[in-house]
Image 1 (tube, rainbow, N blue to C red):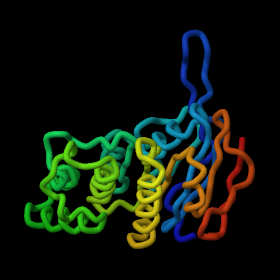
Image 2: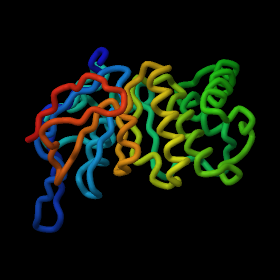
Image 3: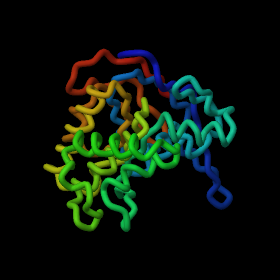
Length: 242
């Protein structure tokens, strides 16, 4: 594993449901380094999405600490978190999240517009990213003209637009058939290697787990003791269960 990029320390997240308190996460601790593909698995309701949302700065923990790219997120202000999400984190979702009226190229260019990159630089970056995910010829097509796998490739390119060190993918193959899902995971793994980034991928598909460097298993909001090596045989990093 390379330099540490993500550190999660004794993180918990509680929600109120009527008179009950739901412990979505309890005492979760682990770290992830640059150039690592980490799969987070568990049944529906295990806490995978909650964990990724906390690491991505979309939610705040009830307890514990999270650090991403040197920023202490649990004490950061709203503006700091917005800047972190724009410049340091790329998000990929199960539902693709593309803007229907925009072309593939325009969708990929949205994050670049938000940080006000010059037009010529933006267009060059978009073209390069679409080629990287194998969709250079589909730049002008809108989402409804693309297959599910192609839409997810556009979403991946968009996530990479600002060259983030961290990619967070929540069930990125959940709406794809098994063959297309495998292609997307192969692409994710190749991107992690070629771009030197870290990827945290939530999945419940056993056939995809083997592509990860490490596997974290959540059960009822807790990280199980011990880790499983993925297909690369990368050295594991200690994870503590609560």
